[in-house]
Image (tube, rainbow, N blue to C red; front, side, top):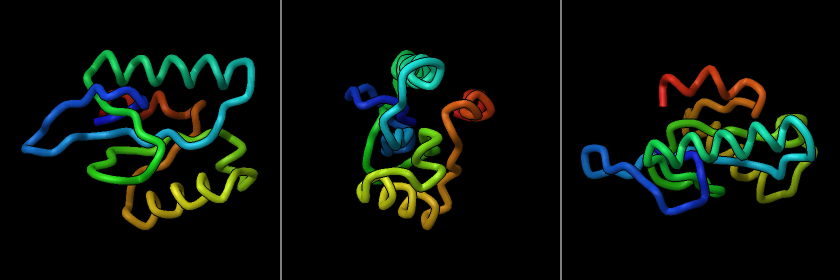
Amino acid sequence: MTISAEVNCVETANRTRRVLFVGRPGAGTELTRWVALRQWASDRGVESITECEGDVVCAIATEDVLDGLCSPSDAMAMQLARARGVPCVGVRDAHVLEDAI
């Protein structure tokens, strides 16, 4: 699984698992949570990515991305994730996925 842009990953049945991070968090709570989630993933050997490729376990997006206030590349990443059936959640709700990842 992957939750950060670092190259930390876990090989599972010859596949690297990743968490897709989409958007740019604003200052305050969202940024603090974003950083904590990326560190949480890194600590578990999960790769964090910003493009929907490979075995993506889930996508974590900023509130702006979820509201459609984002760049075309962020919108495309979310569209690809949803088309592939990847669970997509906001930064504030990502805690529900931590046990599953």
